[in-house]
Length: 257
Image (tube, rainbow, N blue to C red; front, side, top):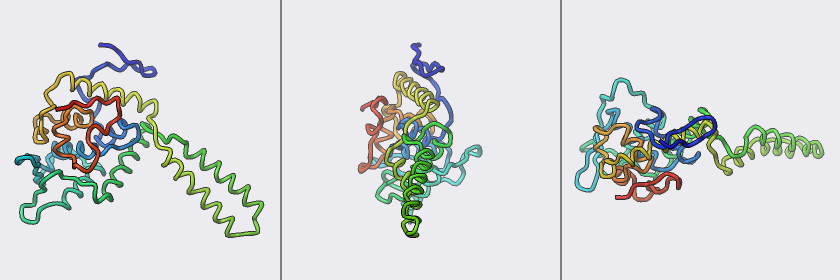
């Protein structure tokens, strides 16, 4: 196989197996270069189904989600799993206990904000992504600047306190607005996942698989929706009013039906 050079590590052009068992939400964050695409939640739903918490089956053009209280013994739910489960549970039909239609909607964005924050937080903690503007350096600069300015107007207590509060809060806003980037370690991990995506598309077989196929395809379908290799499953599970698989970065090739 042709090798792609990423720092000191050689990454194969294609991989036949997932590079790791990392949570799909974190993988999506790395693939999205620090941005969490909506299709991440679709992958999480499939991972939850693979673990046995829910069953997914299609009725006509709609997907029906049935809840099961006997998940796989070895599965530990992450916070993003819990946010997705809670969002789905809130839409359960009172009579049947099922959810019909795309199971997750972003019209109520509280769960989505929590999902994104947790996914990005874990990617940051793992050293896979980092803020474009270093927070610590910016924070020190702002605090020092505020203290220098406050010395000139030290007699005005409210100005002194206000400047220090501004110096503490402004860097966080700047970091958030500036966005995120993948680190060297994240670049290697991202290259591995993209190689796995190329392997899935080269092998084929996932393009026409619906969400119910997760019981057969397992992690290949779970990660396949993130990597543009399983457009039908992604299309059925992703609400029409949010980003589709083509919302992924340009270097993630999306299979079309």
